[in-house]
Length: 462
Ligand SMILES: *Cc1c(COP(=O)(O)O)cnc(C)c1O
Image (cartoon, rainbow, N blue to C red; front, side, top):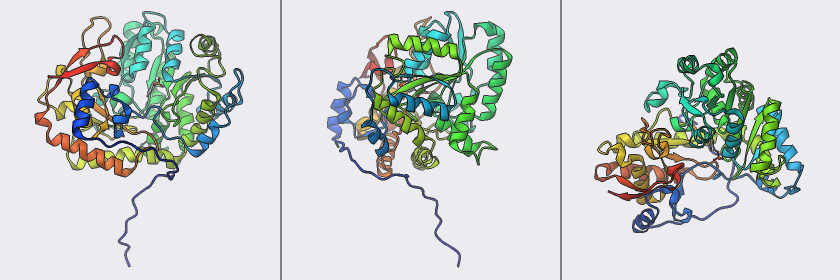
């Protein structure tokens, strides 16, 4: 007899041991909360949020093993045993021998930018990340986006939209000279392009190019495990390799890397810098003492480093990463049923709603993505964030708004935190706002901080 049941469902490779109650509120309550927060989801009180899809940064659920690890924190000022365990795991899984812990990713970016950049130099990268680019600019560099054009098209289904365009890179090198390139800054999956990975083939080409021109190649490996998973699923020749093997191969092409442990490593705080270059390591080890703390804790407690070390072992587990990316995919597939436009292919950590298309009656100066994020929160208590003109900030030379091609609302999935039922509620809320989209008007900015304005900017309804 032919089988009628098709087994295609997967479930998380864990069960729930501890729960954290969340508050359900009324629309009226949320209207008031949104107004008080200046229609900026970053300024909402977390306790007023029902399902928090603001970010996956530091919002992950740690495992019982990680929590147990917190109890064996060695809080010695110098040389704690957790530091050595973490260092061993960085060597083992990322493959770089030198290591400096930092309190989070941007601290590593700050040090690296200061060490590597001579003012006036250029840093090409595959699109940009907010804190990464800011630290490069503060150190005196000009950032140049060399990602492939497909990345700027939200509906292009290219499987590796995080790839670097070698022609763009070559053009830049010809224009400014290899000596004026501080380093190539590569990240993957690329957050601002919709969580899109780069391929190993592209990385190898960039590596060859960099080597030929004697340009340094550095890796923002914050989400590298997700990139490794996509390579395994999509790139020829990698199906039978483990996520750990792919991660290590990726890292091997770089002179060094930095990581925000608040993502892949599934902890609440932490970061690090790792490299093969002893000189850069020594410079970073000197600098960490000034800005972060001694080089064996870098602003972290011993227990945090223990949880990070365990997180590295858990992040490369195939079932774990499949469930993480599978949840994002499930969300996307549900949205498709309502014909809601969002960035394709479905990314690694988040769904990026196309606010430009959804609110096509609005001008970009009226902040469509900022508006859409506020409306979704008011509708259901689901919190996302703006990734558009507000996040892009102002051009440091002209002082004018940067007008990004994409105007997106990011709904990001913390790791191991929400269930499929939460996802269903969030999908229905987005669908309901989408249905009423024509009634939505924009916002005006009434307070603008100098740096990273999306965090603290305030708005009023038009
Ligand atoms: C989060 C993140 C950073 C910055 O790290 P923090 O820990 O937030 O300081 C840098 N790059 C990427 C790709 C990130 O996702």
